[in-house]
Amino acid sequence: FMAPPLAIADDEAKPNTITRMLTDMGGTPGQPARDPSAPAGPIRPYEPSPGVGDSSQVVQVMPKKDRREIPKPVWHPPWKLMRVLSGHEGWVRTIAVDPTNQWFASSGNDRLIKIWDLASGTLKLSLTGHISTIRGLAISDRHPYMFSASEDCEVKCWDLEQNMVIRNYHGHLSGVYCIALHPTLNILATGGRDSAVRIWDMRTKMGIHVFGGHTNAVCSLVSQAGEPQFISGSMDRMVRLWDLAAGKCSVTLTNHKKSIRSLATHPLEYTFVSCSSDNNKVWKCPKGAFERNITGHNAIVNSCCIREGQQGSSILMGGTENGYIHMWDWRSGHKFQSLQTIPQPGSLSAENGVFDMKLDQSGSRLITGECDKTVKIYREDPNATP
Image 1 (cartoon, rainbow, N blue to C red):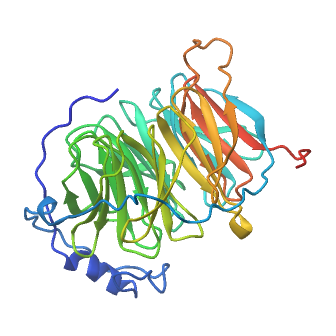
Image 2: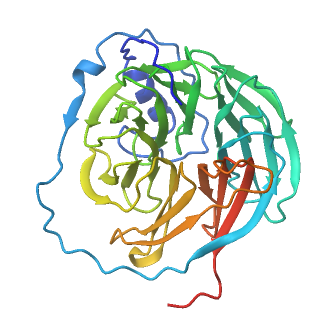
């Protein structure tokens, strides 16, 4: 699945680059910008200097014994398959949902980006441009842009009003596996097989930082609105927290024993989860303090997401390589459902894995990209009772 990573040097950009962006947008490091819609000032190219990996702080805070009282599980209705969308000619690797909740995009091994109407499931548009598997999609909620990352080493910016590529971001030495946008800054982060995390100005395609430190492919990236920070998960079994203002890795989490392919932030809490085949771990932002383990699976977790809920009723969802969607009560860690996906007719019996999953903006529909070349939409059973 993964080729050996290419060697890349640890680089560190001048810390005032992000500080200047935060100041231009009315914010300060450690706080979200006061006016996200205000235009930011130009970002200048930087001269990298070595030493990022040497200055990172290693955190190993796994407690010997958890003495906290375990919360009582909250009842959640079971989820069931609602719709199957066909049209892709290869594995569906990535999903992204429009911020207006009107449509969503899917892509994968067939190198096509397909735009679907969320309500009806109708295919609206197919976009071409990449020459290899597309591994990541991200849609901006501040601009009419969609970003795609591919194994062809390219990162593209699509203008959704013109349905065409308007910018290319060059720099990765190998396939790009993941992509993320900062919620309050005009910043794009990408990671891939070259073990690097690259930070870009999405408007000018200028490189801001090149973060080295991982020793294997970077598979997942997330960010929190309250911090100028990105979090990366890698096949090297490490989670790294990158401080954009300081231009370096601030924390390295080494508690996982298996590779990390998926991260997700909680929409209401100041926490994030890292998912691996050994277990899922919940961490506190921004320092990466360990909170708890969530267990109950024995396969590689390719993707995860968190559905927000009232009074501690949130749900952690994880899609695995062996074709299961596991669902846990967020507070108690109780697994209340394991939903096995069903390969569609014409696909191989082994093609029942889940590559990616995203919740729509209301949290009522779960959209998955799967090995059987389909997109599936799940929702809660409205007739279920405790």
